Length: 316
Length: 270
Image (cartoon, rainbow over all chains, first blue to last red; front, side):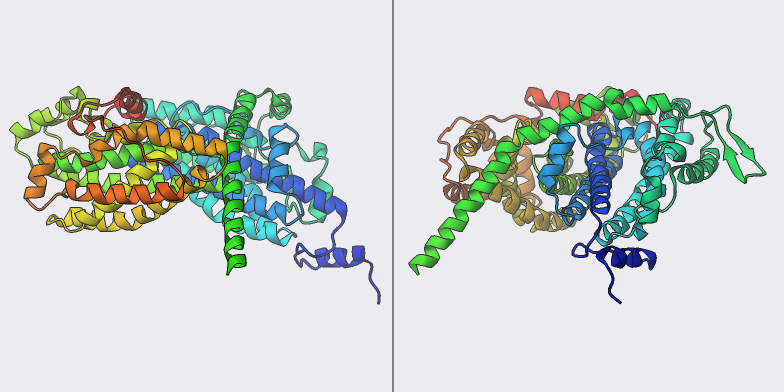
């Protein structure tokens, strides 16, 4: 039986066989993947900034080293993901241009400020915790290079989540002011963390197709509920109050009911009106622009070396 | 004396690690961001080993000696309560005049060329220094030196390669590299300055002979600069003072930032 490219692709998807870079794929599949993977890569790189803020102010030598290593991991995740995107035929420089011009998005959570040391705990616990919920299903996503990158990313993220929780635990067992730091950070990061799962399913334009392609494996609302159910229990261990007066266990559903998420805020932050959008993007652009002469020098030197080698070979 | 010597090494590692850590998230190339962070982590790891050793040394001093060792109010208070000090007390509660790092390592990152030049001068020194220190009769220092040498060998390769890449890259990078090399040159003399502590430690077989290292350092630096088409600065006038606690203005700002948490929220577990 002769199959069309499309039929062959569909059958791979249906049989849960991974799609590899050289396989034929529908143009929309490629585009959706580039969008999703590059957004994720950008989020890792922008995500270095809020935590990077506190490397110079970490309270102990151990915390300083662990935080530095953690932020470095995020740079590493950015690298794996840009590489995975490159297998789809788009260069890293193109993706950077899209980020710097504001065309490409990144996770909105990184547009919130890190105001105290406790934010290092809250980010690890909540933001990395939410990221893991989002990302674990992607270890089995249909596109091979993406799935393999995600396996590595998730291993490290779960370490990050534990270290964040451990910071919160240390604070919650500490003095009055330390508990206050922990609660304050929890209050500020809770709602934005819930927004990380994206708009409600009814308003999520890409969900259906993405689930079919196994680019997404659970819907936004399913993941959000799962995150809330797990995190509320962890907050109890920490002795922290969940900043949601409508939060209540629903016996019938077997889940926590929760209050209304402020989707207006979410949309504004996505649009660029969050507390740190401009600052984050400008910081990245500055690093990129000020690095131009360094990258030029590296290219020029490599070219000189190559030419000299060629010359030597010709002379021989 | 030995405590001063260990603290000098610890402070160098801490301040250098701190400075390199400032690049995290701001590097010109993602791969280089990662490379610099690795190096920063090596320095911080060495700082921790050395501060732990220094704390051990301090805690075994007599009460009289303890009370005159450091003048910061915060440390004085801990000492008068009879509390033993740990690595974090030494890093975060000492005042600037008790820091013993070289002036070189506290100089600001400025741009990639300055960062590379500072690392290159320091890595070349460290490579030779730790090679010597491996022979220390103090087994703790000898084993820290042995571990550090492996790391520093890589650091020196990295910074040497960048000196060459920038020096022999574009006109702009050449100019920037040459300028950074020139401007940081006057902080290199202190690397070989034998203080009373250095002399005493060398006499006891604990510390390294810095005069022995000096000519090797110049050879190494000259060799890389030649490949980089960079001219070796001729200046003879050198700045010093870091090793005796007289620093540049930069250290105060580093400490104000680095020590903020421990100073603002004293006596807590983090």
